[in-house]
Image (cartoon, rainbow, N blue to C red):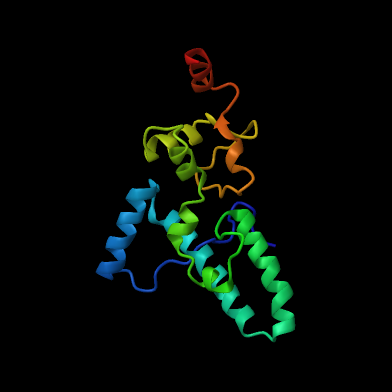
Length: 168
């Protein structure tokens, strides 16, 4: 057992720190999705990398073993909102960090119009003004499942909720 105050790393950083093209791409993604630092980007990239790796492992299995496992992983990815219902393993192999970043609570709050900017969306979440199904969520990096997407709204005690009710 490890120290509970020191959880295991969820990300793998770049192998070489000073590749200009990668640095420019990272800065663009950090700005587009309003990330706090590159660690949040690396977490998304690591998740996408692990999913692609799992898809490559499935492709190496015999057909009868592959079918059941493939359906299970595609169903899980559909519920996460990363692929469509009729997806194949080729779609999983095409997943990128940007696809994962699109499913973050911060991005979805901004795209639903609950915040004026991606940075305001982050602030609203951290300050406890956003809830999913009535339960407050304070983590901007929370990956929203497909069934939770419609339940995102202002939290019941938020002044934004009262202002919205008064304006209607």
